[in-house]
Length: 202
Image 1 (cartoon, rainbow, N blue to C red):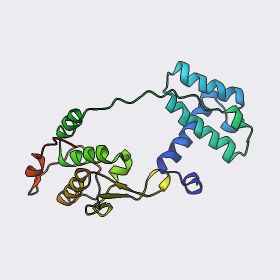
Image 2: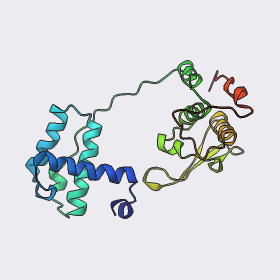
Image 3: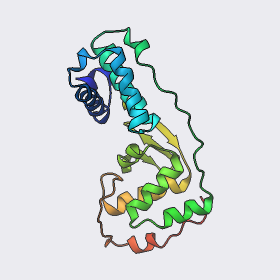
Image 4: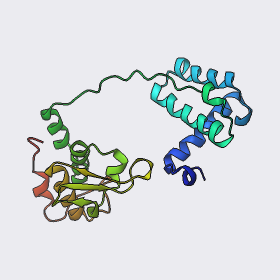
């Protein structure tokens, strides 16, 4: 119901339900009986005692805000459930040599294709795992994301290696998409040749 009405993914819907249930268990009462003081106490408990990351607590607050504001129509909780401030740190940027070593260390062809696509396109992990041959336009160097965040689709332009290599691997492996099994053997003709291609510059 939640996913259908708000166009949320199944994982987001599941997390929201789990977050509300977890908060209710913490206080030992039905979630609709919780008040502002208890909700603020819960947020402090997560940050100070459980030492959860700010991003994790923000996701939990989003679930609680949806429950109280959208579902119960208790709009006063908009002020009572503020998001904690997230002081983001700058990410570590890998050098070209480090990226090449990471990709070359892949254990199999699908893992290699997945890493190249992630680096070359900036796609989300779930989006890459759902990538199909029909989504790749090697002529225009474009990748079609059919089910992005919020269910929205978009076209991504990319470097040749991040487009052509995944298409070759998917065709070679006859795989429906780029999700990588834990164990997979490459015995088809051409796999050994592709495995020996080394990433030198992206």
